Length: 280
Image (cartoon, rainbow, N blue to C red; front, side, top):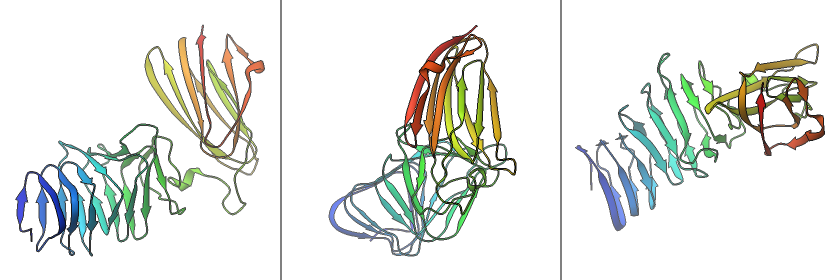
């Protein structure tokens, strides 16, 4: 049995079951290399990485991520009961393509001037989350996440950094009318414009003069049926990536005051396209 202590690191590397008989604080990394960690309802605070290569049984407990000075990465598929972090400025990464199930409460709260950062262990590859209970998510910055429940997580006072599915419901259109399909025109370069008949969302990543410029176009349905989104680029060379999250997008590059219509391409959800050019 284990518990009632504060440890720097904890490694479980044995067959069978290790049982917590009281709450546990791990200041750095917790590694389940083999065997089973049975929390038996006892809370665990973790400052560094959570690495699950064996099995974890939560009971009705809370795993709390602490310590802003460390980047925490959650490895493996995990079944948490309550999962909590209330540390402004903290960075939590989740292993790409792994699923985090939260049966009880998901509580992720940063600070107004110091957001809690949630991302993937591999940029561009989504981490999966399945929160089935209470959700209290505020002051966060989210990227590369797929909420597999299909019920939107709606963070308050937060930033959508792109490539998220079933997050930020306020920005998605026309509920109740079925799948969103749209055909905006995106002109990339000196000026970017989107015209849309129903609504939808895309992510645009531009690199201008070596500086990364990320713009997320949220296109809302309104009574007129048309919304426009414009973005002006500075002069210089650029590289732009268009990633379609939902619907259908018609993309075409813009250069020297003209749309290069001969390079127009239709992208479906999940597809991406890169353009390079120069704004003179």
